[in-house]
Length: 449
Ligand code: ADP
Ligand code: ASP
Ligand code: MG
Image (cartoon, rainbow, N blue to C red; front, side, top):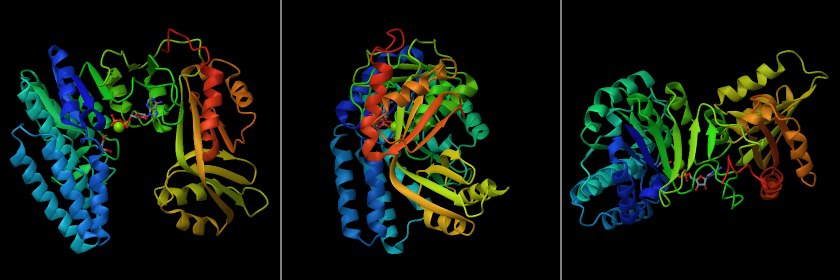
């Protein structure tokens, strides 16, 4: 068995889904289990509709909902799923009207709304497969993907999910292509949850681990993991092979092509992950395994994360008293705000966060014992490579390449395979370009293409 996950752009239209069907057909002998995202930008649209409803813009919300309904009908004309789509939009309309009355968005309601994208797309893709002669069967992901109650960011209950997946999917996959939605799950008592934005990749790897798949394929709109984020620097090279550790680090530091949690289940069961392009299925993509062949290029890729806030905290006592760091982190922890990068000196701490939702409260508490300054519009640039730990001089080359850019913070060594820097968001493009030129002017052809 293999798991094939198709992202939003790969299933954005009738034509795109037909392309997916062709890709799946060509691999039918591998017994595919297909995981799909919502069509195109559906999840964003659903969340916008819910937000408009609770903000009192009921008519706007209902008009946008109607657009989404028409879009789903238009792209599925002749598939025989009109009644099912209609039933889903009925249910969704009731929910949106309810939100407009309540004027309040509960996490549970948010998940109920955003789950509709994958609920619909999985039914649609399954119907398209059948129409095109693929014997396929739909499984409601919520019956096999069991999570905790943390709505919008639910954590899978692995033992329970693996048990359910193993008990149902392989038997079905023996005779049919299984189709299910990514991103969605349910609590043990049947309440719909979601795994967080971009979570369909995570679904795919959990399914892969649960059924002991031979490979987990992430089909998307780029040729694989590229040497730089193409939205920041176009024209990077395809990374042919990287390690689980490199992929996890890149994903965590902003390479959106993979959800950061994706590789964890794959590592646990040692299942290869491959990133592939659904528009160019002939391209080999990026293979991700426990270890990747060494290359003469010391870094594998440059990730970046925008919308970062840099926080500087200076102890108001002369020296950093014992317990100072613990106190600071206890506050960030209590406000569920994760810290990405960290640097300390004798009396001060610099750190970065990307969730500023609770910043005012955090500031108030920290100002009881320290000076606090926060600066938005920053970005993290993160060079990743297993070779960083063995090849000397990588940091030196990076700093020479960045000699004209003000680097606000540096972190190296914690994971041994990354060197991270903070720069102003306005310098991000220049920083990535300079680093890319330094490290990838002459990339090792065995490792990059
Ligand atoms: P999908 O809908 O298929 O899940 P995503 O939009 O979530 O697709 O992820 C693919 C996108 O990730 C690409 O279009 C690209 O803009 C972005 N991306 C960011 N960093 C990288 C990188 N290093 N390599 C490839 N893609 C990247
Ligand atoms: N549809 C969800 C999102 O847009 C999940 C995914 O696409 O991976 O976040
Ligand atoms: Mg994605």
